[in-house]
Image 1 (cartoon, rainbow, N blue to C red):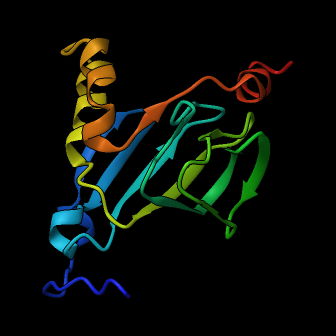
Image 2: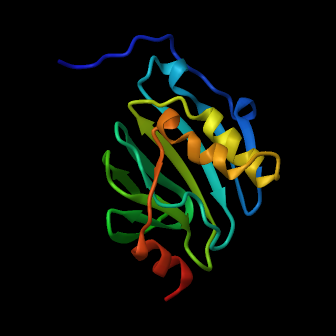
Length: 164
């Protein structure tokens, strides 16, 4: 059976997307799953030179699409560290460890799409509050099921990001 979500057309103007974070890691919340009938959720993340994006994690139910709009990123996909440059796309399937960060020496501008959609705007708002010291790490740990964002350890990622 094919899942065909029903929803009205969605238009988000550049100036309407909610801004989150601040350099070296900032972004825009483009569209959340509730606006697309669960079809997808999307955000744009901008990372300064070598900045970390997401730590290693996996999603049980969703694939995550990364399209590099500018610059270059390192992306963990399973145990492999990929370098993705402007115009490249990486799609990570469910239950696959992944993480991302700007390639050292380069900025990265990344369009991220999660499908099927997971309501994640509140997750990014939580990360934003953590970055400002307005929330506690335990809240993030407790949110893993809610946002289908399950943290894990990746020696390959730790080694790649530490320059070892």
